[in-house]
Every structure is written in structure tokens, then in C-alpha cells.
Image (cartoon, each protein chain N blue to C red):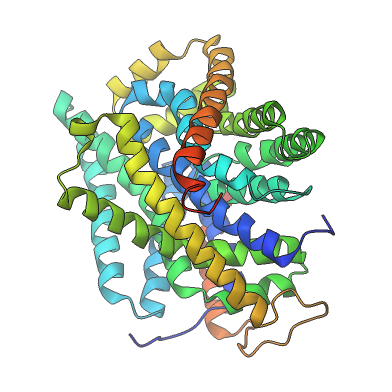
Length: 193
Length: 230
């Protein structure tokens, strides 16, 4: 991390905001409609894939993805989500960073794998739903009506946790492809990729 | 907008942490309810401190109405619509304090102050610079995003008309391009002014814990006390 220049660090800050904006804006939809809460792990990494792929064009050394993960975790914490996301970020973001480094921050399959691993931290927002179900639904039940709670229970049997992890990975792979398509169609032409 | 008092950024950050802990972990009866009420009031106080009276008033009106409404609805006979309304009230009452405090932090903390405060906390440069950029760019991204949205509606482009994928493209691509360009200019400006030079930078802004900070901490302590006791 010592080798990071000021330019690198400023880029990390900018793309943290963009990534977080994509996650937060589209993640909030799930608070209103239960089915979107359940589909969130699929479509959120798809949307966030666009800023993340553009970010990767600026990453050339270890540390940038790690710092971004930590900052995203802190932002999630500050906007009143669970503390699982920052905890997971401490492990997953450096791991994603290492994978991307193994691909020299250029080779596409490594970048996709790195993004998939990075996206897994978003599971932190639903961890309480599975591992502290009673307490979580009691708390959530205070802010939602009974029908919402019941449909959450119906939609989330325990095996759903594994499905959500799989959805995050699939969503991340699709998101990375979408990001690359947008990169080629727009950002390279605009001279910022 | 006249400031009544100015807080050290560390005070604001600590308050954000404590408020979220309480909103997350506290129950809804006895001392816990009082703790919630105290922390419900703190963001309004901070907003008044930076001279944002109307936002503070609007926040208080909305969040306290929501809190009272939920209480009243859940105490009476429950119909289906009543439960739904209580749910909406509850959602607003729980989320509004954290979000409003976040807004207050973003508008009140200046970038230089944040950097000075984080440096004093011995946070490494690798986190201080990106954190300062995040603070600087949240309003930029919000403004750009609103501009893109209004440009789209001026051209009659809606989610229903173009489909989700195209809509996403129209919405995100200009936002990313303009933000990244602004970021490049910021980088040039920052480097010109010597950001990232080795050694410790001197700062013009003065930060430090003073009377208002002590008062806010005392109020937080009262809230935490209610929570721990009750």
C-alpha cells in the first residue's frame, strides 16, 4: 500500500462514491418491495458493475480495491445498515485485490473473479435475516407491516442464503460483462477508459 | 446562514457512530425508548448549530410525527391499513435520524477540517485522502445525478419507454463521465497545491474540542446512559 500515489488515492475516493451511489440507490428499492429485496443480490452487482469496471481501468497496483472496500463498508455502516458489510470487506476486499493482482489488473477472467469476490460483501446486509432471524424480524417488523414481514419469511427459507450468494456471483459476472460493454461503447470513445 | 457553533469533525463522526449503535441495538420500551428519543433530537440540534433551521424543523416535524403516529396507531385497534401506516411511520422514525445526521455531516464538515481531524487520529494517508475525496464528491454526484435526471425528463425519456437496460445506460453513463472528468480536474488542482507531498502538512483551519463538543458528548452520554440502564 506504500506505493499508492495521490492520484491513485483520489481515484479510489471518486469511485467509492460512484459505486456506493449505485448500490445504495438501487438497494433502497428492496426496502419497499419484498421481491426486490430478494432479487437485490442479482441486480445490484449488475448495476454496480458499470462503475466498478471503469474503476478497474484505473487500478494498477495493490491497495486500491482494498481501500475502496473498507470505505464502502464504512459508508454502509454510516447509513444505518448492519456492521457485517465492513467486517466482510476487511477480508473480501484484500482477497479480491490479490486475485486482480494475479491477473496484473489487466486479464479479464481475473478481474471478473475479483469483482465477484468483492460483491460478496453485500451479503452482509442480509446476514442478520438468516443468522439472527428472530431479532432481525422483530426489529424490521417495527418498521414494516406484518404482511411485509410474512412475505419476507416466505421468500427466505434458510437455503435462500446459498442462493443469494450464488445470485451475487452471477450478478457480478453479468455486471462485469455489462460494464465492459459500456466501457467499449462509451468510455473509450469519451477518452476516459 | 449563520453558524451558532462549530463542532470538531471528530465529534460529528463519533455521534454518527453512537447514533447508529443505538438505533440498531436499542429496544422500544422503557429506557431504550428514551435513548431513542435523545438520539432523535441530536441531529436536529447539530443542524441548528450550523444554521440550517428549516431543515432541522422539517426533520423534527417529520420524525417526531412518525414516531408519535406509530405509537398511537399500534396502541389502538389495528386494521389492515392502520398496520401498513404504522409500518411506514416506523420506517421513517428509524431511518430518518441516521440519514439526516449523514446530511448534516456532509454539509457541515469541510474537507480541510476532515483531513486535519483524521490526521490527528493518526489515520494513515491512504485512508485520509480517499475519505476526503468521498466527502467532497457526495454533493457533486448528487447534483450531476439530478441534472442527468432532469435532462432525461426534458427529452421525455422514462423507464417505461426505453426499458430498464437502456434507462440504466442513459442514467449512469453521463453521470460517470462528468464525475470522472471533474475528478481529473480535482486531481490536478490537488497536486498543484501540494497534496501528497511527503511530510506533515500545516493546516489553516483550527480544530479542537471545545464547549459545544463537550455539550454534544454529554448529550450522547445521557442517551447512552438511558440505553445501558433501561
